[in-house]
Image 1: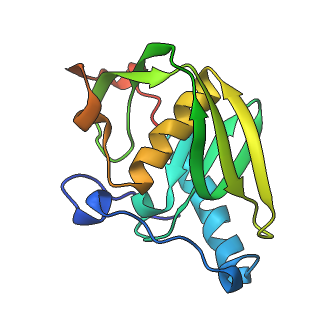
Image 2: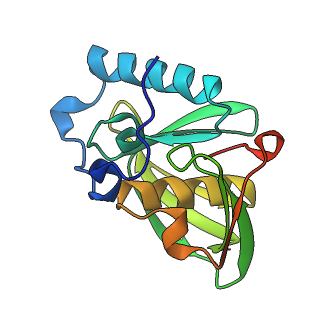
Length: 160
């Protein structure tokens, strides 16, 4: 299991480095992803970016629609004008719940582990998870965008 980096660690404020062609599909990358899944589950999370566990690389894992996803070099290519106020926790900011605006729908472009490009239309919670994790990859935290921040009760915490 990996250790989740928490604020004020400076890696959380750095823009991550895109994966290069030769880094895809490597045994080391697959091992890191498996360790990230284990860590995310143990911490009761539904999303985890590489920099949250100390790797300055542009990828994240997420769990939605009863399935694990891994997105490499992700970017949002389109987002809805319609915003919703999202209530989010973060594994790197324990004990905090932030309320912040997010696009209701997005189109995400990324690469799979084999380097093949994919594009997905995401709505609701999957869209929110991906926006949260892409913010991490760009050094942005929920507290930077929050309209309101409250202390979390332990039973309320499900973190991205």
